[in-house]
Length: 486
Image 1 (cartoon, rainbow, N blue to C red):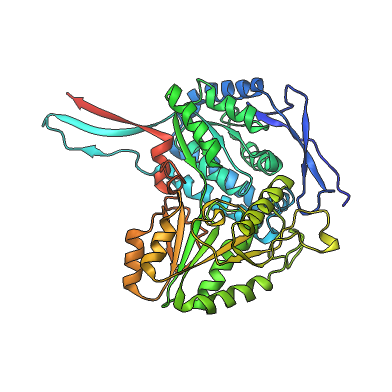
Image 2 (tube, rainbow, N blue to C red):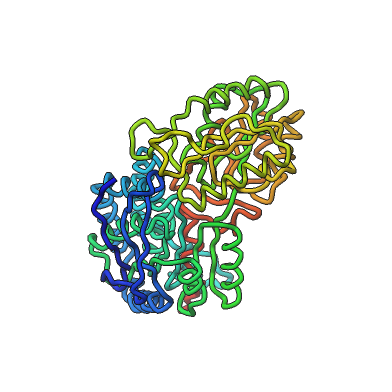
């Protein structure tokens, strides 16, 4: 595939600047690794220092703007993003491998997130509290934290940055963001929307580079007052330690091993459709992706057959092509990781029903394609039932009843998302009360969210500082309690 390549730069203090290292890295299309999307900066700690200094200077002015004025910049950026949705979605698909239809939907979600937070500029940020002193006025107000560092993943390179950028800015903070290396060009195109919206210099800065360099520099910098991270548990725990050591706030959204429970009272057609969608779209590379289907024995066989037929009908293809239900995984590293997880599942005794191999299609020979994979005869103790795979792999687990299903669902270290399929209200309430997850659904996919509702997990999936909705205000602001007495 012949395309014109472009060299991209960091955004620091309102200017596009080359990394001080002079080093660049190619961004490769996982659908066809002969396609070089562009060249992105490999930055250094010095680049981070420059970005933080710019954000620190800008904070003094930005924090003093009325919330309505800050929101107006978000509105302008949303309008520009909407105008550029096709270009940004195509870039996202070329960098990450998500199908074009999913990439466009994600980009439009970014528009919605920005527009939601525009209105936060006119909402209340405190409350009046009755005082024990009849001659005093007691109330709270919220103030921005300061300069915040954002570290975002490659699987949602438009939506997740907006989960963090939009509330951070509208509540008066300034930002230095380290986007995922694999999807830096997508992030840069998002930054262009803010720059072209006239956002003041230094308010929003992007530094591209390796996590070991840029992520550590952000976490260690004394002028970074808060870190918001979405990614792996191992990295998240290191960030938490660094933040605690210097007293910075931290917000972590990490892994999931998300179950669906299917009872004998379920609509099996609906359950099968939603389970396959949740496990296979985006090649399973969502933190909320369905990884385990826990099925009551009475409906195990008919549900299994429906799953098999739906997976067999999945079209795997170049993510840019119309008709591709599932594209590649995001990189060679991810490809190898998923293949190892599949091999481990077979070795531990789970039965490989479908898939598990590289897609055998000469037209896809230069991409990182893995067949949609289904295991059954899975025990809860097996690695494929315990470890996050982040690929198109679904494990079926048979149980006696709902009580056992809930025990199995909870028998993991994660607690991000879960779903149940049933038409019995008593089962819904039992599940709601007992399942250990931050995001729970009834008769729906484990994936998806509402931008005005809190998002996040429990257990090892999250530090429980919620993203989205008004809940984001808790992380991106600090409370002042004020007493006025004449």
